[in-house]
Length: 608
Figure 1 (spheres, helix red, strand yellow):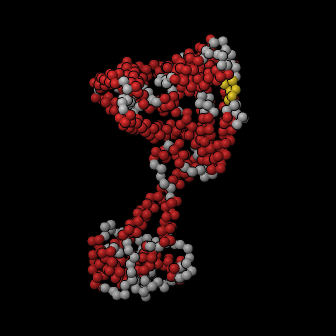
Figure 2 (cartoon, helix red, strand yellow):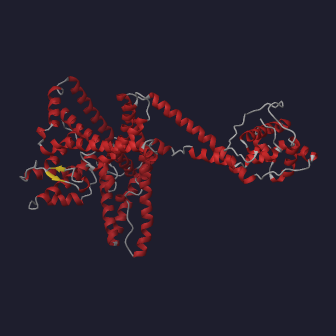
Figure 3 (spheres, one colour):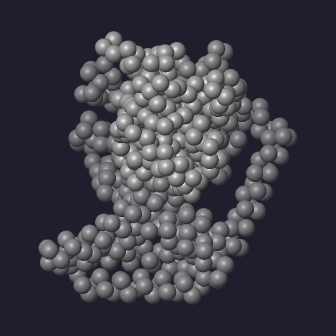
């Protein structure tokens, strides 16, 4: 190693301000993974959305192939429900087989009996508890879009029924039997499953009594399908799907009926097109593409199990969206604690009348309903016991700013109304943010985690792949934690340190006094580099220059064989070779870095 280093002080300064070092540190920092936060990491949807696939082309290809496969599969499942009466579909065959061969089995009867006993006991428990009664029987009402999701499959079926009746009306303009139902379904904003069920009963009754051919297939080629995809439907589709929904969703069905109903629900999760339409298949295609990307990174022999676990985790969000929305609605309904069911109905009606009066500027009706709402809320507060108050507070948080349960500002002058709308919009936005954050941070991770565990139980757990991912995450986290203090120290040095100029004279007295005062300046004992950095602060510039010149003159070198015991071995960060100067070569820079470490050790051993 070369000893031709003229001045160690200059080398220290050169090391601190070396552009190669800054460039290397910036590159390392840029390559360090940035944590997306616990919410993003725990939520499979947000995590998938913020991550960059290793092979985008492979992911896009998987999305295209999956969409091309799911659309025909959706058509195959839908075809018998569109073209045939229920008794001729394979759903009916499954129902009959189970009822004939399994319903008579003792274990099936015992299972049904236990289920009925549990349902009865649970209902009694709910009826005897104000908290449970409020939670399960007084849900809050969301906005139109969120409420449609909360209503689940029957809510989607009601929208689908309106769409089918409109298509039939377009194909048969002379038929007017569905006009009132179309108008009601288009304008109606169903607030409960009971309302939707009454509407669907009217639709099915009208179809059966109208004398029209329910199995007549109506074909339409959507523009986005480029003439290849055909959208087929019929009135029989409404009858069949609604019948299956009732069998799994409402009590009273046989074991075979429940099995066929849940089969329909399962195929909906598989294709996302039974109720929601073909457009939703594209969303699932994205999930499949992401799962293929995850499987491509899995260890050999664990690719299929990794794919199924990833797909189950992502699909759980779509499959349970209605459950998640209903959970939020029921939590928000806890604000009705202490309010009887009859008063809840009065409250909602009063809010509806007040908001209609607010649009029209009807001060009298608005103020009357506002007083009624306030009285109902005050009566509810008086009925709440001390231990129920925290539960009611939870309901107030989740129910904050609900569109259908928040009074709108009363219309007056244009400017005054515009100002009054600002806090109202902020209230609605804040409440929406709270509920969305709860779904993304709490509900979705829980449901997706359960779906992944179920996939592990069925298809196996990719142990090697998970261990590899865990090791990579720990390495990335350690690198990030190690880089953060280095970046902070570099920034502090850049702001506080100044280059040290070489001195021609040596002030021995000053150097001695500086060494004696160093223990008082040392903030963290044993931190040698911080001590050396403080020696170079502007107030001690002359002293530090004198020490460096005294400790390492041009003809003297401090090397590893000088009897110094190192507490660490430095890792020099070097740039490309510079052929213009011998002192700037790689060997000389390594020499300078090692000398700097030895110099720090030598000075530290004098005063610690």
